[in-house]
Image (tube, rainbow, N blue to C red; front, side, top):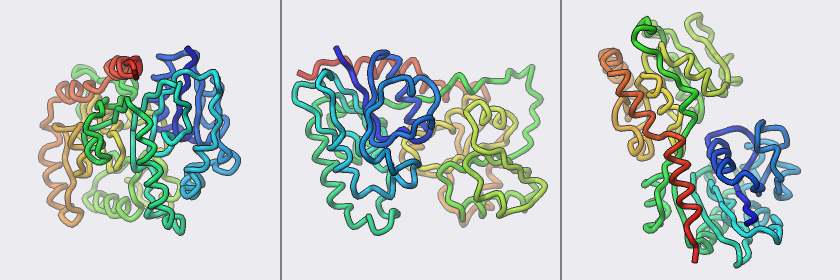
Length: 346
């Protein structure tokens, strides 16, 4: 059987790319369909597969440009040619690629990772097309009889009561655990991850922590942030792989991961290292993380919140936190997604 896998974009490495790689491992001879592909942006097995993309690949060379073309995504997706030999299509959607024109004879499986990948209210004049794009996205769901989603929250948000829930996963092997006999138990800094963190909130948080005499280490996209604060107790580490995040994590008091994403992968990685995390109080985080977490609900009460962290960050059972993180392991995900994508659609 000729199998293809579809995904919204191949423009940079993110959590969706790891999910794609795991599914490619289940279907080693499959090809890839996507809206936009920047050749060489993602190293590894993906670039060795046949890749079919839309006309947006010629202009959308990064995620920012991709989002600015929000208003023409329906036409770009519908114009992607599906090879006549394809018999089974597994669609990993972040809200758009599931609008492919798929022939009736193809077995169709839809796994929705995210529905708010593009915040249409922030894309500029293109938001006047929001109603049109949203109507197309929602109607496109009807062509799939087999649908899975990444969380219970997403299932309810989209209104898919019969969808399977298959929680995502992350690179658990990149977050090793330092045994008690090898750990010095010196927790020297606050680790702030900048993925999805607004500039004004980053400044507010870092300035506050520095005012308390804390050492702050920063990881993630930070080029535009480096010149905003100059302090000897502030270190920018750049945007690196999970192994580097883990290296900074082992001796962190807490890991600040204030990202509104479809899956709190880096927070769970911190738990795997035995360290507590700070998350925004949102339904996704609360669905996946019930312990080892401080939920930030009000920026105006940051001083009291910090005091709570300072009183409790040493009190967590590191091994228990690791077990909580490993609940969302790769093997379980692959088993669930394999069962879902091999279920008859007839």
